[in-house]
Length: 88
Image (cartoon, rainbow, N blue to C red; front, side, top):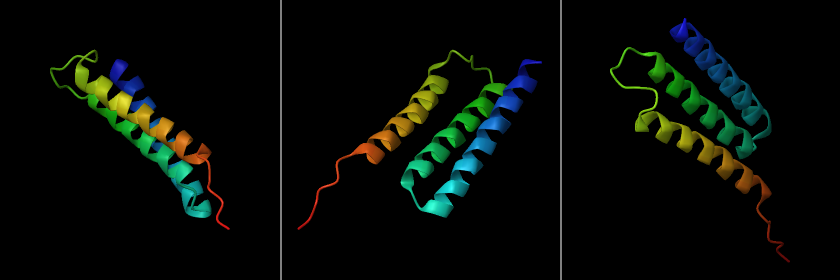
């Protein structure tokens, strides 16, 4: 049952990533690209957790992927909110 739920979470993450990619293509705003990359990494993380590899979910590799995913979200937010300098 656990593998099934991990698969469902992974599928949802990939669908959300595609959703953000669609908005990025429409608007060209990198904010949506950052979120698409983050959800894509999160989906890959869930796929790796569900695979029958002898690693435990509490292993460092999974947390590093999650930290990378969250850092991409923070980078997207900081990119969106940075001050724009006015040119005269």
